[in-house]
Amino acid sequence: MKVSDFSYNLPKELIAQHPYEKRDEARLMVLDRKTKKIDNKIFKDIISYLNEGDCLVINNTKVLPARLYGEKIHTGAKVEFLLLKNLGQDMWEVLVKPGRKLLVGAKVTFGDGILEAEIIKILDMGNRIVKFKYNGIFNEILDKIGLMPLPPYIRERLEENNKYQTVYAKYDGSAAAPTAGLHFTEDLLKKIKEKGVQIANVTLHVGIGTFRPVKVENIEEHDMHREHFYIKQEDVEKINTAKENGKRIIAVGTTSCRVLESVADEHGKVKQIEGDTNIFIYPGYKFKCIDALVTNFHLPESTLIMLVSAFAEKEFVLEAYNTAIKEKYKFFSFGDAMIII
Image 1 (tube, helix red, strand yellow):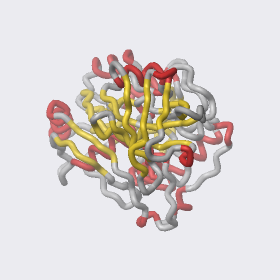
Image 2 (cartoon, rainbow, N blue to C red):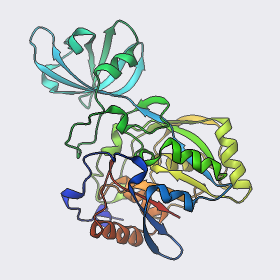
Image 3 (tube, rainbow, N blue to C red):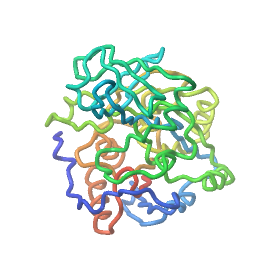
Image 4 (cartoon, rainbow, N blue to C red):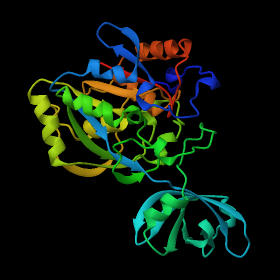
């Protein structure tokens, strides 16, 4: 199977640059896998496609404001950091720009001196290990001076960090938002619960690798990035109870889907677990757990559109994408959504 099999032509003006003012008023495309019917709705209409006893599974990871702009001490050279991985003891793996200015021993200051970093090690891929020095609580400093690590296709500045955060974000650790969840409001979630739908949490910390292109022509040769996840017992029970009762598991986003499919047994049951997953889902994969999927519109030739094409037939997905282009849907992180039932 070739990467080019998952290509489509997207006009640049359909790439959303700003979040919706009202999250649940984004557009919603409904794909019915059995009838091959496509409907156009508003996201708040999603409640009509959820039934009593179903289990909606959301990813409650929280995006770190992990993009930092600072200056190299002594020279004043402008420097950019992107925090990638917390190694403990105030040590982080970071992506730096420009790398040639930051050799081992170099020091950088951020936010008028409230945060300082020293380069400890240069890794093979060019990333750095740095040690931070500060007074206070690190995450509070990040909230004060850090910016959200928006995807490269978003060129506009984000005025409010919480616009790139789900309303149920809880655990710090992501370099990107689980964007299908951006459309939910607290009021909509309340109405979903009142309908008798169970809401279960998983946590998968989205890595910067989610934006990494597939560079091999044969997709089976792609080396999928690893991401950390965990699922708690109380959420395991909600998911398994729905399965036992013959109800549907509806994954919100490809991240929730990847957690569930990583841990499910052959009967679709899950268990309490913490670990890393590099599961790569593409057409031919047999789903074990999920019965429906809420997702955004993804980049051409990305692992995300491959996952969606595995859940619904590739030709049907590409038909839906072309329909979305004709109907002027907005694409990618701040764009519109679809539910595949």
